[in-house]
Image (cartoon, rainbow, N blue to C red; front, side):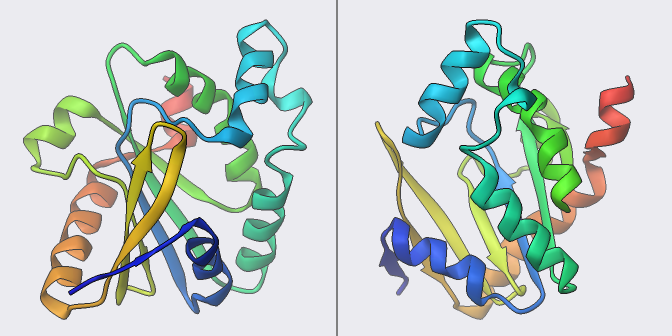
Length: 174
């Protein structure tokens, strides 16, 4: 049986992991309250990298963790064509990479061929999975999974996605 936690407890996971935090990002759009205004500014033509105050806490946390030797990685599934949200995220991504996240990209059609899940999750230290739960207003919490066989399945999906995806910097050059 998995435990359900709210957004605050989910945030605590990023301060307590020891070695690695890995994300599978599968949604075409997210409705996070803290992204509404920055997305609208981008939509109105203001370059996204000019105002990253809304993202600064995350970037600072990633930078501190990676400087301490911990690893942040993610694979983002991309639609074809990109949704408007994903186009915005592609412009935000260089800030994440500069902070220390290793971000790779995987086309949606390939993710389906590989049998990767349609839901988002984080894997912490290869022993704990947080299956993200979303509502109309964004993240509502996470289901925490520690059962070894289920965690192994998530680690297998991670390995498939990670070895198949293209690093952001390489993708951006194409």
